[in-house]
Amino acid sequence: MKFIKTNFGGILVCAVIAAFAELFSTVQIGSFSFSLIGAPVAAIIMGMIITLLAPKFSANKYFSGGIKFTSKKILQWAVIILGFSLNLGTIASVGSKSLPVIISTISTSLITAFAVMKIAKIKPKTACLIGVGSSICGGSAIAATAPVIDADDEEIAQSISVIFLFNILAALIFPTFGHAVGFGTEGFAVFAGTAVNDTSSVTATAATAEKIWNANGILSTAVTVKLTRTLAIIPITLCLAIYRTHKAKSIGAKGSSFSFKKIFPWFILFFIGASLVSTLVGFIPQCSFTEFYSNGFVPLMKWLATFFISMAMGAIGLNTNIVKLIKSGAKPIILGFCCWIAISAVSIGVQQLTGIFSSNL
Image (cartoon, rainbow, N blue to C red; front, side, top):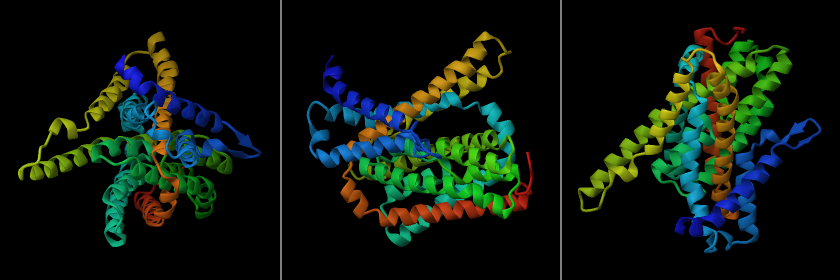
């Protein structure tokens, strides 16, 4: 009862923001669809606008508890639920060919983020979030990493904003660029799956490419490559947790308290468990249960994960000073740009070496 009294108002506000964001993402004006922006980004913008108009809203005693709960716990629930859309067996069989490209682009992005962070003197947590967001899967990777490194809401909002900017640019530029430089249909699918971040933007990029190439299969292959990248959330977050644990132990040795249980990202284990459930169901012979799971349960989980991420982004937006965000935005944008260019160049280069670049589906 106390939980409901403390948190209900804030959770409800975040749910309403997420609902409006979902509705906004379905709007289409002419040939432009706002689904390209995506509900999570729309939610964070709505939250920031509310705080700009009513600066003390998120501090109100009726809403503050629920807003904080949504930005932390519901964000973790979203990542866990996302695991139900990952069939490890399917990803292994379809995504294995693109694995060298995925590993190369992820490594390049993380190294680039670290180098630019040092050169431009960017906050380490912001650089980490932009690095994993660029290299793995945008908002989902940021959602998984933020609790592990204890990033605050402004750092999360800044990282999401940077990722959003280059997602939009990729979706608008890459299909025409890919056709002009001579990508094959398979080559472009791998490129879209490795060089574009959030699933919504990968989908938009690949769907546009299918129209340009007048070919089927680019979309499904690009999304599979993207889901294969998503699995990198597991080792990245665990490595960050181990690093933070080691660092906390060092501090603890000097007299500060340290709790492994508090630092370790336990929600990632549930994410792995959800992925294993989906994988095991794939081994069951086709029946009414597997049909319901694939066509009913999994789509519902995908939608729920997106809705929860939108709720969390709305909460983060409510705790973010948009004026301050814009004023301090130049360096993170430069970092995001460097990661974006590096990933794109490495994806093309590795595909040229492995022969994927000009191959067709």
